[in-house]
Length: 463
Image 1 (tube, rainbow, N blue to C red):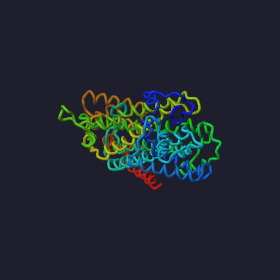
Image 2: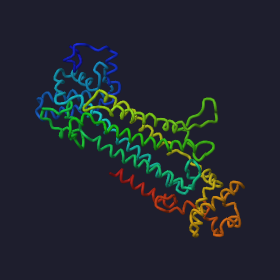
Image 3: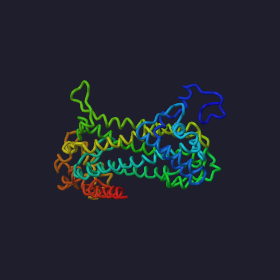
Image 4: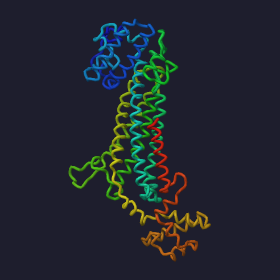
């Protein structure tokens, strides 16, 4: 007979390399604390419901608590021979208290046990992601308020488009991260569900109390279908999807930090803490940490696609394929927590060069729309105004002169509606401040929105 804990009907033993291929202890050891937490709640319920004798429940509880202490002290050793964290813990418990440890597995299966551990693991860590997001959003709000009056080019197609407030730019990312935060909030709802009690796939004949276990573990809800309970990994897919969107947002801003810290732009300078040099070129200051965040998006996306592919063809209920659900999720969790911390550090220490931003607006014709709007307000159809300004821009490009460098007489040759007040309209700062529509870039809007965003964060931290 096989010496595996599940080996009663087996007569042969697998080779060591086969055991290694099938084992998950190499990564699911990270759920050791959750496995013990779930087992303590389960055995408490077994004792309370009289499913096992109170003395046995007490012995098992004491043994599990000892294992908790040893785990915290780094004293537990796991082996591939016992495949996964669940069988490793059961073997360690058996060594500690003897055969009575076998009663712990009454009315449960590794199928609902692993699902519970995984739910707990994600449930315990989602709040940390949301705390880091809040910290990053707080930094953005402060920077936006401090830099509301800093004017820079706004881009479309990576070409100068219209002048905007740098604070307005920063608050655009606040909004993106706000949606990320709300997605993780929703993710919590589907993570906060108890699978334990579904057993292998069909439930159990023992008179268990699933609500008591849910209350003990702090779950808000219980799976109402045993097949769904052991086969669902939507909560992990939601996390990976949310993490992918989050790191996409981080990567977009990282790309701009990389560009804007280059010699050609020089809009910002990254702190030395978040930069590296070159082994051969002494002058180099590389935005390596921003580049790493940009690069790590590939790994995050890959793990989302990996789990989607694992799940797409699986019949109900549990299949061994689902062992591949955890390693990628663990890696992504570590990655986005680290990326959020690093990104916040980069922004909090970022040096802004307002004079470079302003200088880039001097001859870029990004005030052309202002002139078109000016003419439209004088009664000229916008399409006609667009054509008039286009001709003036062409003239400026050919003569290497900006619109403001042209005399009033020259401007009036293209339209007699242009008057002396046009030069004020063409000023980039005036152009920014005139955009007072809801969501617009006016400095007053940026101040107002930063106050609104700060109120959102204050409410969140109070809640």
